[in-house]
Image (spheres, rainbow, N blue to C red):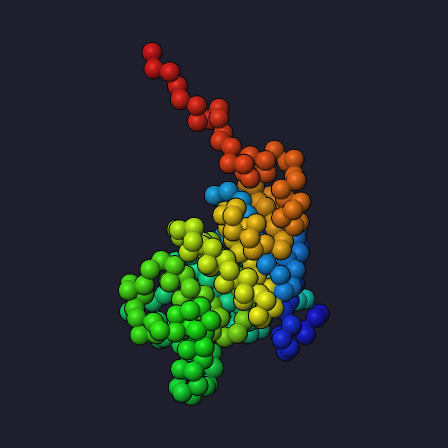
Length: 264
């Protein structure tokens, strides 16, 4: 087992080894095998209901596969003891779709929450860390603002600051540009790229935003109805002749399904 990434600044590979995930009798993920490379941005792409969010939950250790393994730097997440899994999760940062901030707390307190929960640092040092994280995302002047006083893009950046609170080695982002205007989305893409360059994190982004994919992705995994239909770099994705990928990448409708019927 490679334990190096938990004790150094190195980021881990994420290996998905033939994982299957289902709810009751419905299988959502159908034998996904992929390597999300360390220190790179991997984008999980696909249509609605294709299994993207389910895969993200499996990587987080929240949704055990019915078969297969999820390996972070050699650690089999679902073979760990509960206390070991908690330690691994401290090294994972998560950006949820709308930031998932606590509305009753100002921004600074939202960022401080995981630091207080998982460290014994004194309050002065915690405040310094909070200001540093907010400065990384350009929100250091908004420490005392409440989430409902922020725009959608600012809430996303605030959620990103909280995801960075414990200096994670893996950053998982669920639809980071959804609901944002093109300029704000481009700013968030640039921020994610800057974080990769500055900290060398392994970053996984769930998205259906093609512009974002082509801007930030080093590696792409495409899911369709729970099966993996592509794994590789964005250049090869563009060249694919797979019918689903051609339709998805070119935004082609299901013509027969949606064709209007003549009224007699």
